[in-house]
Amino acid sequence: EPEVTQTPSHQVTQMGQEVILRCVPISNHLYFYWYRQILGQKVEFLVSFYNNEISEKSEIFDDQFSVERPDGSNFTLKIRSTKLEDSAMYFCASTKSGQNNEKLFFGSGTQLSVL
Amino acid sequence: AQTVTQSQPEMSVQEAETVTLSCTYDTSESDYYLFWYKQPPSRQMILVIRQEAYKQQNATENRFSVNFQKAAKSFSLKISDSQLGDAAMYFCAYRRDYVDSGNTPLVFGKGTRLSVIA
Picture 1 (cartoon, each protein chain N blue to C red):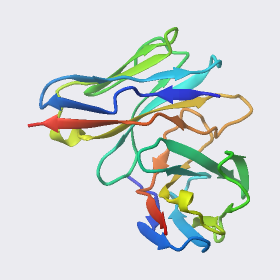
Picture 2 (picture 1 turned 180 degrees about the vertical axis):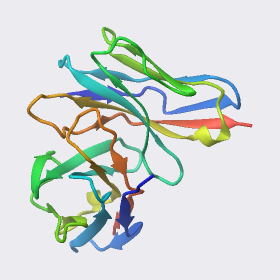
Picture 3 (picture 1 turned 60 degrees about the horizontal axis):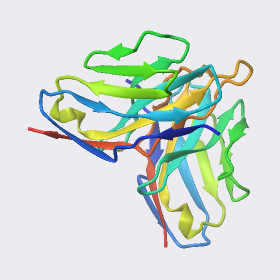
């Protein structure tokens, strides 16, 4: 089965630093998502992206966050100035269509630790 | 806002036995979808089963089945003939269905960690 690939699997950064989390969605998929999971808490939606623009974003996704599809294959999440509370597992996901019953294909996640 | 509640942080089951994981949700919508995702130690989220709210028949996928009670807003997952490979974190998730808004977010519960005892 095709896979969503995320790199790196672990990222450690200092508070205030910028980080970019990278994802390679499945090649014929058109809708892209970022979710995050703080340790011991539920998985939370951050943002969805289609046709080179944000479709929907949560209140977590403030001005410190941005997403980009720079080259037609990668889908990145940037956190401009990381805070301690940004420490979490970040999951990228993709779907082929925008059908709400469609299966999301998730990556294995990037564990971000902010020190 | 929609919420999803999984009241069992941890469950265990003997190999070959049956286990049921609970999930309740709160919504004012009439059209929506419900999902169970499995997260093994590899951390990847894998879809186990999905249910359309407009369907009365409970979804089944091999050893996995759901008990969907729309009026009670309950969506439990039953795993029959449990196997060691079923050990994982299981997340219940909800997705609203707006005609003009595909691509709506999944709302997850906090998860239930299932252990399978040999």
